[in-house]
Image 1 (spheres, rainbow, N blue to C red):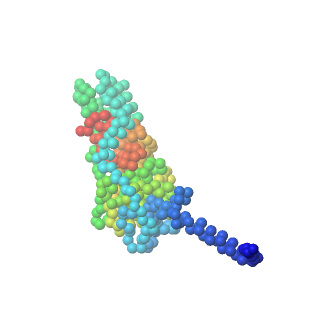
Image 2: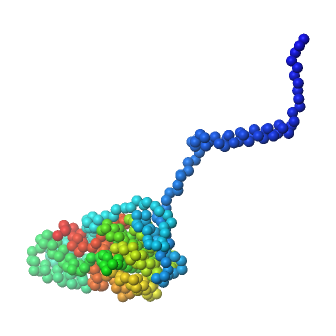
Image 3: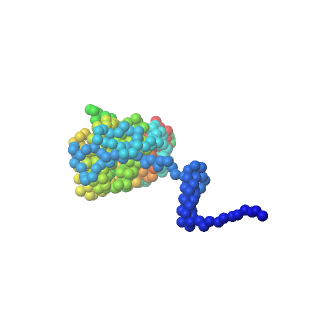
Length: 412
């Protein structure tokens, strides 16, 4: 009887081990390559192909031949929409920022009047109420004086204003509310010295940019004012360059650069603790080379009682003037400081020739008379007023609009 004969052979164990290793290797390779063949599945974390761009591009500044410099190199934050500087200046990173469109001067003036009317209404209404009363005796005139003094008009201007009012009210005889309002407006506008030149000298001349130096004590909102002024000039179609000469606070330079980036303006900055005069010099030099319209130089806030710091401010101005005249020196004063601001103003005017005043935080105080007092003390006009925290809350000062806001009247 036939059958199938099975033969068994003994397999070499080493061969089995080799085959097993090869099999495991093949399975591992299949598992590794499978995701790339299928594409990323839901469980695979997504990775962006390129990182988010930084807010600006940073470049080394110009060569060191022409100006005295502190250790280290000056850096400039250059928005991509601005043409890169000249030879030897290379940007590291290019970005496309979304530039903001600043508000026009007309819109600012409308908001100026509305906000001043809210913050100064007590002052204006108080005067109108006193002068429209049935009796104007000595007690009433005393209260008029107290109202003006409380608004920081100052002693001498108050005495003069009250004397003029008393004379004109006596001549007027019958006092209708509308007549009193018109009279008071006329006297307030006169006290505000409307004939002073309040124009900003920010036009190119003789082939160079206008240079504006911004000074003031700590805490007045100086750096913010420079940023807002840059926006105002950009809205007027000016090419602006910023110089962050406050080298004592790195945050000040960062803050100014951010203001500039938002509207496509270059900011020149130096190493923290470096020589502020060097940064100001570099800013003006680059402004000349790039043929911009205006160079705004932000200086460090300093106490008016610190002689060394005030001398340093004088040095900044002298160094800048080696390249170009300083067209404007704007002194920033916090309107809420009242008469103390006048002391500060006087000291600054002795060190640098102040050409105009910027009053900040005017919407947060009922002491609007500080405008009259500071102009009388310095003999220079209030050119700009700050009215709030918004980026466009800086406006040219207009005496008529200011008086209208105080009294709640329509512009003449």
